[in-house]
Image (cartoon, rainbow, N blue to C red):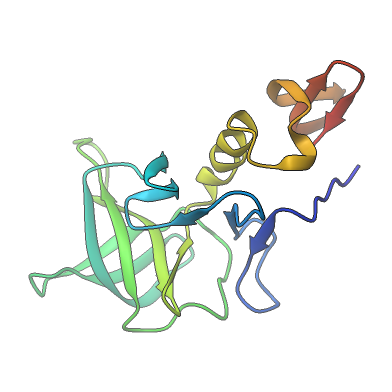
Length: 178
């Protein structure tokens, strides 16, 4: 089942962007949330932090599916890991501000992971692995009015063999598959 709520706006770049490339912005009528370089904020508190330590950079080009070339503030060019295999057509412009997280793993090939890119003054998430974390936080903080009645959140719920949903929400009277 598809579940939609009018109170949540999922931003993608213009058409042609894979569904997995999105930034959930909880621009709800009753609450104020937005994405900053620190993470997703709710009023003056961090709602979901980006991995740390962070590094701002300038996006230069996408060299292949999982790699992008960035210029660090020092002027050094660096190939960084891009966790989004989608094309991201429409919002990748050379010269855009980017946000990277730094890994301390010694065996890792790439020092940085690309987390977000700034487009028209807004941060757009590029790490598709964060999508369900953002949704889970929004659900647990009761930020989606039409889903406030659900008290139990189960991630990666198996409905039947070969069919999984991202979330099963349970309430007093009913369940919701999301």
